[in-house]
Length: 114
Length: 112
Image (tube, rainbow over all chains, first blue to last red; front, top):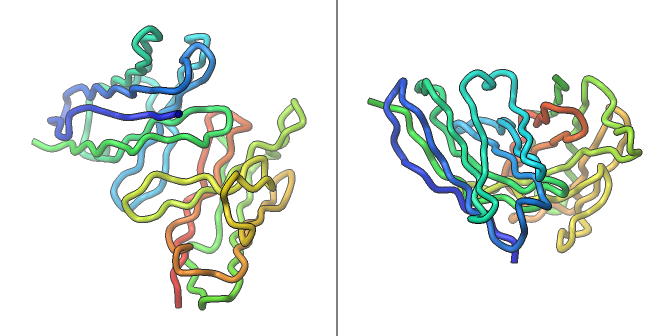
């Protein structure tokens, strides 16, 4: 059964670094790409980036300078790190499996506030 | 970046009537592999987006046949026939032909 689950801190201070983990089950990270998507409260969806099954990455150009995605295949985990957080980074962060884009995590709400 | 223009922003439909949502892309979504990577999602309050249509016109497994997708190139439409209460939420189109992938801005469906 395919599952993705995001985890991380609910509150991050401005200028700090956000670290999120997407733990997957039911498939291998060597076979599927995993994407990150975020959604500010009451707003639309924004694609952030992807880690390909091969390990390569691609980022949204608007976030590229602050964003890093990596993975630990043996632990079935994908990691998102984004630095220099601002209040506008407050959002629900989702990981999703690429290809069909059928499977999404439940999302994790991150608030950037002092 | 491919801009996805989705209309209308909101839609109020009586139960049993049809709803139609348009999505236009700033460039063709036909991939070099011959597929058109345009999907439609419904996001219900407090939930993750749920896939309704993939490859522009293929209904995902388990999705009601009241939902249909059509279109090609840059013009796409989602139709919902005989709207039911559980159809309320925000609908998004999404292209994953061209990087960076992009979403439409959403259409909020309300029941009149």
